Length: 173
Image 1 (cartoon, rainbow, N blue to C red):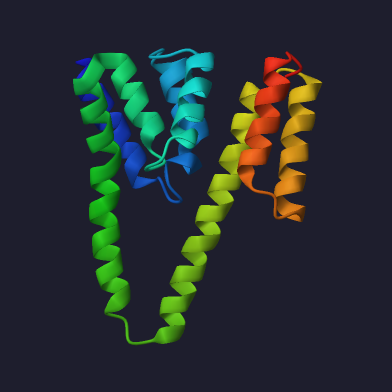
Image 2: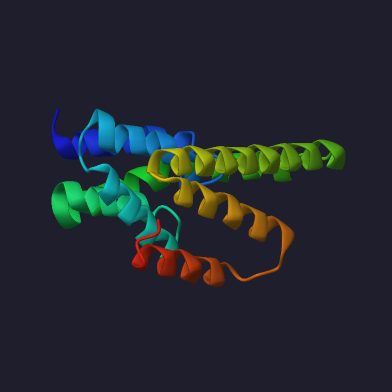
C-alpha cells in the first residue's frame, strides 16, 4: 500500500478513538509508528512528543511530525488532516445531539462520562509512555516525583521541565 495512503487510513482510524486527544492514543501511536510500521525509532518518537508538548498549538503535532518524517511536507499535511477530520465530524454531530436534548440530567451525565473517559485515557497513556521511554531508576524516580509535585503543589510545569532538562544535561536521566 502506498505510504501516504497508509498514513491517511491509519491516522484517520486513530482519530475516531482519540477520546481525550492524541495524547490518549500515544501508546498505540508509538506501537504503530515505531514497532509496526517502523516509520521512526523510539528516540525520535520521544523527541517528537517532547517538541509537540513544548510547542504552542494543538496536541496532535506529534502526528504531524511523524507524517513529516515519513514523507516530508506532504506527509505532514496528510497525517494532520487524517488525525483531524473524522473526530471533528463526529464531535460536530455529537454536540448537535447533546444540545438538542431537553433533559439536563442526561446532558450532564454524558458530559461527565466523556470527561472521565478522556482523563482516564490520558493518564493511562502517560503511564504507558513512561514505561516505554524510562530506561533507569532515576528516570522512574523523576516521573514519580513529577506526578507527586503536579498533584500536590501548584508549581508551574515549566519548573518541572527545567528540572528534567538539568538532570538530562547532567546525564542523570
